[in-house]
Structure formats: C-alpha cells, structure tokens
Length: 413
Image (cartoon, rainbow, N blue to C red; front, side):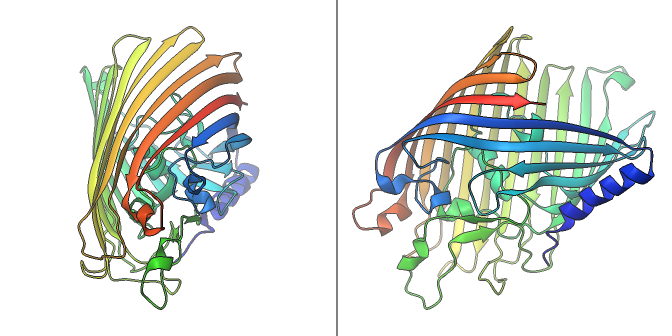
C-alpha cells in the first residue's frame, strides 16, 4: 500500500477549494544557501547521500550549496478547516522536489477544551527545536541528531487528535495537551540508524523518497543482499501504528513534551523490493525553558529499540540520543551552542552485519538579522563517531572525526 501521491491530491483539493470557496491562501517561503568547508579526514567519509560512511550531509572539501528552498502553503477553507502543505526542493538525494507535509487540518472554535485534528502527512510534535518555517530550526542551521533522523524517517500517513486545556481560560498558570495518533506507511523506520548510524545535518526527506547509504550488504554471504536504501513510506504488513503524547506548559516560560511511538510493524514482513518491516518503538522527552526574554535552554532525550527478522539472521538494536541547546538573542544578534550524544547498541548475533555505533557532536551557530527578510550567519559542527560497520572495508577505521564550517544566508518571503 503506497499512497504517495496523496500530498499532490491534498494540495490540488486546496487549490480547487480556493477557487470555488471564499478561501484565503497564505504562503511563507525560505531559501537557504551556504559557503561550506568540510574537513573529512579520509575520502570515504563522504556523505551517505553519496554512498559514503560519513555522518555529515556534504562531501566536498569546499563548496557553494543551495541547502534548501521550501514554501509553506496554508489554505483556510473556512473558520474551522484548512489545508496545509510544505513543498521542498533540495539539490541532493533521491527526490529533489516533493512534500515534507501535506494534511487537512480541523480546528474548531470552542469555549472549553480546544481540539485539533490532522489527516495526511505531518510531523509528530516531538521537537521544540524545529519550530520555524517548514520544520526548520530557528537556532542552528544543522539540526540535532534526534531531529536530523526524525526529518529523514518519521514520515507517516495518519490521523492525529490533539485536545488542549488552555491555562488562561481556566485561570491557571498551566496548560495541558493530549495527543493521540494512528498511522500507516512507516514500517522501515530506524533502518538508517542501524546501517548508517546517527547523523548531523538539515536535510528533510520528502514523502515517497528513497534514502540511500553506503553498500554495506556487498559483504554479506547471501545470494540476494538487501538494497542499500530505505523507502521511508513503505507499508509492508497492513498494520496500523500509533503514538500518544502529552504537553505541559507553564505560562509562556516552560514547555515539556513526552511521546511514546510504536509503528507496530511485523519484523518478518517484506516487500518485493526487499524492504523489510522494522518493529520500532521509542520514547521522546523534550523541554524548553526561557530564563529571560533573551536566554533559553532546550533539550531532548530519545530512547528506543528496533527489530527486523530474528536475532540469528536479522537486526535487533537499541538506540538513544540526547542534546542540550543554549540560545541567546540580543537585538538583531542570535547565538546558539548545542551538544549531542548518541549511540546504537547491536543486540543480535549476525556476524557479518555489525550495527554498533556511538558518538558526540558540538554545534556553535551565530545569526544576524540583516533585515526583515534576510538573515546571515556562520556555524561550525564537529562530530566524533565510531561506527563498527566501517571496518567491513579493508583498512577503514571505525573511529572518525568530521568538521563542517558554513557561512549561510537565509532569505524569507
């Protein structure tokens, strides 16, 4: 079951509705370009997008890049109904143009509890980091390891219901939100963590994309090895996954979110193109606290497990990651620093498929708001990673360091 044309159907419906109904259309767009210096110690540390074993997005030592161009389209059909989609272009990867999100949004006015229902492709709101246009980050150009992965693989087709008790209406300093969702088409999730490991970047996959990585499977003693890509919207078994969550806000100073995600995939299911089902579960906890109007601290922790096949011939991994991010804003100046730590623990006994990896990363970022539309900045990301599957190649070492320096321009309109 691959309903990957649904974003186009949803967006077409929005445009038709805007013609036949008194609908309001609004758009927000972002174009980001960078001058980059990438310090990779060896040639084979090129990006997984170029079939390498590195954990940064770009491969060349020195390059000028168009990182992304995206547009959010919001069509308000009525007071309660809207259709929302984000169209993205990137110069790299398998699919260069497509949709990050496309969904129908129902949000009726109410006196008590507030309700919101989404149907389509959308990101679960695990993240307090990615709160800008098109699920980008207002803090750093590269995302944390957690949200780099969420932007790659968490792309379900589903239904979500949020119900909120706003503190202001109940004369309370606290607001509470509950979240319930059911979805399909996310059966391969966590395969990138197994075969590539965690990564630090800012590239979001689009609906229906195949994400490629290095061909580890050439070393397997099997007649038909797996293809070296994950199809992020495969449905292998017809099962329905779910996630539940809760948000607690204290005034406008503190926000805490806790989620449990379970895709319910059958770990023994397989598609004709050798895409397997991965039973993946995890807990995500995130927070944001504003010490002052200028200073805030963000953090997130994720821990889970995934399994594909049995422990003798398949993959059974635990994975975890966390980050802390401090952000300071003064007039037109913004500065952020983030520390990430991440790991994948290999629990199966398959000798020719090592999945163990670990590492840490530091990102320091500066932005200057030159005008209402133009933002310029500089960023450095240094990542230390140790991935056991690099040793499958003769002479390659598991431990490697990578550094990326960027001078970035963002234009919004």
